[in-house]
Structure formats: structure tokens, C-alpha cells
Image (cartoon, rainbow, N blue to C red; front, side, top):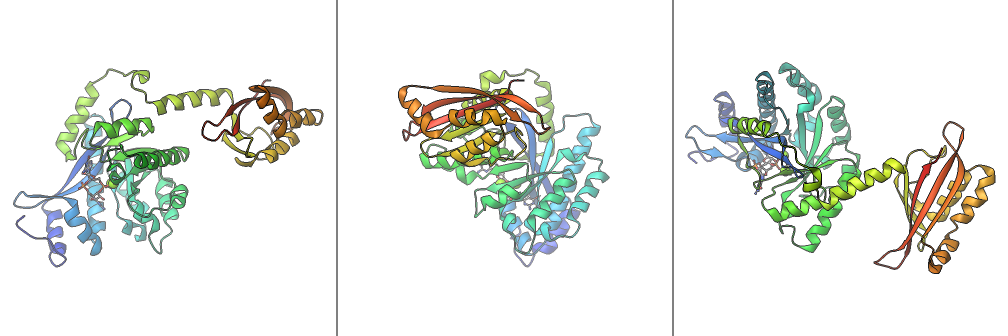
Length: 402
Ligand code: C2E
Ligand code: MG
Ligand code: MG
């Protein structure tokens, strides 16, 4: 590099860089983990110095952040992204959602969302094509109500992605409250090539957590087939990494989009499925038939509800003490059926029945619906032992029969 960037010279240099179009936006595609199709992309800044040398953001982003100049870079990149998408739309090319990185300092910027909307409108780009990436470090940014900040972006119609999840001190509690649609798993979590047992346990837990919060997951920095294989078993939806594609100039990205448009063969999901997608399909099928599914540990008197659609007027906790759940369930039944319900699902009676060899138990009772009408409800329990602890478990499937 001809010029060494430092705190003293960067302010002047970046201003000139904007004027001279030395800041380039590279695009790194995000691919479907299931069928390898391009589903989106991330915009990444590059600085092409006047001597042609290309500088990576690691060299200038931290300096710009320190001097408060990062805001200008982010808006510059966002404008470029809007211009690119607008061009693609005009040319009738394939368009995918592109995410742009926004430093946490924007959370202190007045009218951030207004400005975002104005730029999108100026280029006439529908908001569904634009996504805002904020790093998990922004979630703990002092003096800012980050939930308000993110909510306003979401309410304006933009998608939000939490970047670098797992790289720092992210509070899971925060993530659960931030209305983001996407969680990007940091590449540092894949550093043992997904071959280390502890690494796999952590990843599995993160994917489970994200999916239960209805977030789409993106794995960043995927470089190997081993990583891809394991991520598929976790149900990871999107893959961003050198294994598929490196960040590339706009022109190359446009060509890749064009190519992907031409490949029309549709892949059979059952040929490319992972165990996780198969389990999800199975669960979806079960929930269609049984809106209420409960997993219970009879030995420990606990339960956990997997799907709950208002079965009764009185709302029920989704996890807690099994005997209390039965009391609650009985109270929503037709008075003549309450004893039948309580006796059928008596915890001690069920455990004894299991020891005698009973493996399933079914009862039909009349339950009060939201509309004040009693309906017949069939509840079936399936019993099994927890292979890890010998506890007796019950899986309850419940549905209205008329
Ligand atoms: P990021 O947002 O987490 O972007 C992903 C980084 O991972 C990119 O680095 C990308 O090139 C790299 N990467 C992707 N796949 C792989 C892989 O398979 N292996 C490895 N080793 N790396 C991979 P890049 O482009 O150098 O950007 C670094 C960081 O700089 C970005 O991390 C982002 O935090 C920041 N950055 C880049 N552009 C902007 C920008 O316009 N605004 C702001 N605020 N930050 C930006
Ligand atoms: Mg990013
Ligand atoms: Mg990242």
C-alpha cells in the first residue's frame, strides 16, 4: 500500500475517496443450504486506492469508527446498493435482498429510519429488497434503546439481521427482544470445522434458539464441506462463505445472478433434505392435525408445550408443573367430564400403567372453546422412557373431533 492509513490522514483521504469513487461495493451471495440457490447477498465495502491497491475493511472500518466517520461510509454503501438494485430491476434481471452493514453509531443518529426510507424511495427500491445488518455489539450500546431503534426500522418495512452473533458478549435475552428476522452466526463458532463435540453442542443450541424465535439463520465464513454438512443437520437456512463464493465486484455478482436465473431445474427437497428439515416437515405435518402438542416428564412432574392454539378460554402457561396443567385442563372441560379427564391423566396412575406395559391412553371430553361452545376434544398420550435418564415421558397430541 502506498499510503499508510492512520487517525491523522484518514478523514481527508476518505472524503476524496468518496468523490473519486474509490470506495467499491462488493457483494457476497448468501446461498440456500438446502438447494444452493442464491437467496440474497451482503454488501461489503472495499477501498481501491488511486494506485489500484484494494484495501479490506479491517484496515479502515475500525479507524472510521473511532473518528465517527463510519456513518458516512455506511450511507455511501447503502446508496450504492439501492442504485444497484434499481439498475437490476430496470434491466429486468433477477433481484435478491441485499443486506448492508450499519455501525452501532447509527443508533444515535436522529431520523435514521427516515433517512433509510428516503434513500430507498429515491431509488424506487421496494423495502423487501433491503436489509440492515447490525452487529451484536450494537445490542449492548450504551445510552440507546436498541429495541426502539430496531423496531422503527422493522416497522418501516426493512428486514433486520443481527451480525456476528456469538463473537462477543451477546445477551440472549436481548436477542429475544429485538425484532430481527435474521441471525448471522459468526465464523468464529465454526473454527473447529464443526468436528469438535463441544462446538457442535453450542451450534445446535444456537440454531434451536433462533428457529424457535422464528429467525432465519445464516452461517458466515463457511469454508468446508464438513461445516456445510453439519450446518444442514442443524437446519441452517443460508450459507455465506468462501465454499460457495467470495465477495465480488458488482459486475461479477450481476453475472452470477444472471446464471442462476438460467438454471431452472427444481431440486427435489427429499433428495437434498437434512435430518433437521425432515424433522421439521414431520413436525409441521403433526401440528396440522394436532394443534396442541405437549411433552411431559411424568417422573419429574413437568411439561412443555410445543404448539398451542387457543384450545380454551383460559390461557395456559407453555411450560410448568404437570399436575397443575391437568388441573387447568380439567377446569376447561364440561363439568360432567372433569373427573374423567383428571383420572385419565393422573400422574401416578399413568406411571403405574406404564410399568404394567400400557403405552398409550386416549380420552374424548367436551371442552369449552373461545366462543363459549363445548366441543369434543380427543387427547392421546403416548408413553416412553427417556433413554438418557429412565424418566417416564408422555407425548400428548390433542385435537377437536367435531
Ligand atoms: P461482516 O459484516 O461480518 O462480513 C463478513 C466478513 O467475512 C467479510 O469480510 C467477508 O469477506 C468475510 N468472509 C465471508 N466468507 C468468508 C469465509 O468463508 N472465510 C473467511 N475467512 N472470511 C469470510 P470483509 O469484507 O473483510 O469485512 C469485514 C468486516 O468489515 C465486516 O464483517 C463488517 O463488519 C465490516 N464492514 C464491511 N463493509 C462495511 C460497511 O459498509 N459498513 C460497516 N459499518 N462495516 C463494514
Ligand atoms: Mg455483515
Ligand atoms: Mg459478520
